[in-house]
Length: 165
Picture (cartoon, rainbow, N blue to C red):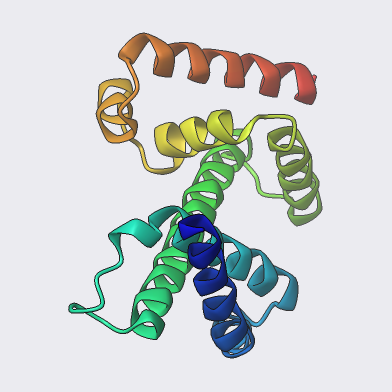
């Protein structure tokens, strides 16, 4: 019975806030598809964190919008790190003379190549080359062992080389 009451409370939270929250996310991103993804991420995080919600600290709405803002920030950080990694890889191959058509083609190839990586591998590559972190720094940041991070970066680089060959 207690589980059903929690489900009912979550359904109420969604019904009361989803439309306005989607409007907010659409406005902030300018992209309805991305806003839908962020809305889903927000409610997924809220569902996982519902036991930690404290009504004495904030209203449900404030709590939910805080989660949404964190999702937005996380998305922005991921995109920025991926963009820096793309620029870095692109700038090394175009260092002598920059042909805009070739540069665009190279970036497109790199973007397609990154798509073959798992989320964890993309994140590792973005942290290593986009954020310019060392492998020990990445291990500390992600809470993974150094050997796990090393292996992930090595596999990701191998997959990228194979995909671009």
